[in-house]
Length: 287
Image 1 (cartoon, rainbow, N blue to C red):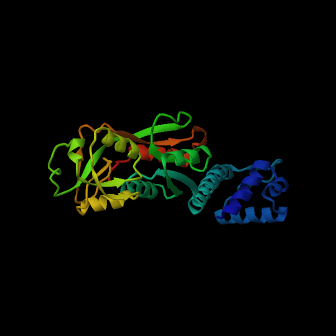
Image 2 (image 1 turned 30 degrees about the vertical axis):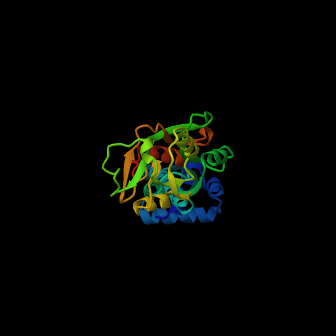
Image 3 (image 1 turned 135 degrees about the horizontal axis):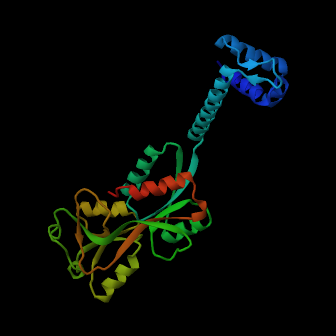
């Protein structure tokens, strides 16, 4: 039994004649007659009552008509699924530059394993750049800081985090429950110039007349943490960062925190985006 034979049989059974059935199936009448004759010979049963006009299915033919429609429907569904896998729809994701590389990698690799039918394109940038890309429909969704200013977008808070002091494991602050900003006086400081609250922290230290000793400035957060681990200095970082040989110490009088979340355009939601929104909401955020 071939799919073509089933299609031919359904065409004749539903139109009530070989001529109309051949027109629907886009074949000649002799061809469709021969196709159904071979099907009946293979099954050793009459499928059509040719004595009546219009032609109607026999009892066996009625059963095949029912089953044949289901077979073709399932076949078409499988074809569509395979086509989706072969040519996956692109999901364009914007990622805030100051998010931990390992956190972003863990999220996207986990989503990719669970959704092989989705192709992912990732763009990083500042909060302002990513929101602009989203507004211009160059991105489908953005992982960024939620500031409450972008009410035209849908959003979901994923986690909140304070800023902490990253110190080497053997640093004298590593065993303390917390430190104060004044404790940074004279400390060798590694400055993350890409920090979203860089100016806020700088102004706060200046206002309190706390003089730090800047030993390195970088816009690469992973490098900043690697240098902390090596003992070059300490750094103020978001709490979700994590790296071996680095301890995170709360700063009791540094009242700076950020909410990380997902934003997207309500009118652009589709199956893939909805899957990503749901997945991200259930994801365990670990460095």
